[in-house]
Amino acid sequence: MMAVNEGGVPPILAQKHYAQPSAFTPENLLREARRQKRITDAGIPNICILDPDGDIVRSLLARGEARLEAGWACYHTQLYSFSRDGIEFGIVGCAVGASYAVLIAEELFASGCKLLISVTSSGQIVPMRPPPYFIIIERALRDEGTSYHYMAPSDYSDADAGLIAALNGAFGGFPVPVLTGATWTTDAPFRETQPAIDAMVKRNLMAVEMEAAALYAFAQIRQKPVLCFAHVTNQMGRVDGDFEKGEADGSHDALQLIAIAADRLRSRLP
Image 1: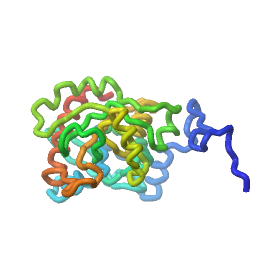
Image 2 (image 1 turned 90 degrees about the horizontal axis):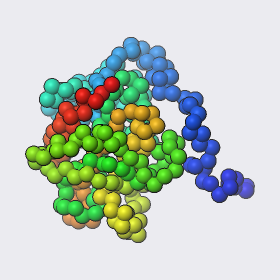
Image 3 (image 1 turned 135 degrees about the horizontal axis):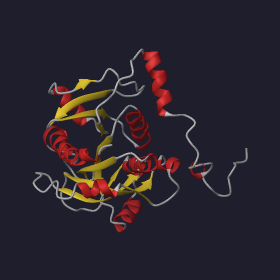
Image 4 (image 1 turned 30 degrees about the vertical axis):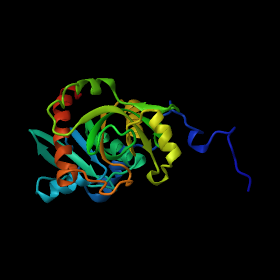
């Protein structure tokens, strides 16, 4: 059978009508989920967290600090809530990858979220220092698929400049280094070839992760506040003893980071 090719444009870039509204909405999905699951319409915390590795969620549950949100109507995940430094948070664990992260982001904001913070484990590209450390992601290279359904093609998705500026000086006394810079978002971590990595080094991309480019494209188009951190925990398994994150699999540091960021940003919530 002859392949159909729209003027040399791959399918992921074809028939993208960016000005048109979505036919299928998270509000409609959640309405039907509530009906099927007999869940009453309930609010969620204003500030929510995506924890792709699930380490933060597991740590909170192990200490008895997280409560299951029975009003969360998502088909695919569980939402937990917890308090830290006087701030109430919602958190979803193990939403790995661009498409899954944006699916959950859509549903969180449709359910009442006002600010979303993602902290994802990432692999070192430019060797800034020995892992672990954090990066405030200013922009992310769009080497994934989801962002192209939200935003016309470009090299990068950018964070909201106001959110980045609000964190100036926030981590001066933090026990783990917190850098600021750009990352590479990929859909296929086991296809990071050496020539590709070399090209990313030339772009001065500090780390590779799987969600930020799509989350920032979603945030820009939907006009929602989203901030992404990369937790640089490894050198892609190329050294012995890799993937050591710190105390409680890095969750102690990540929670402290989130609390500081949320305290700075909550005054900007609508």
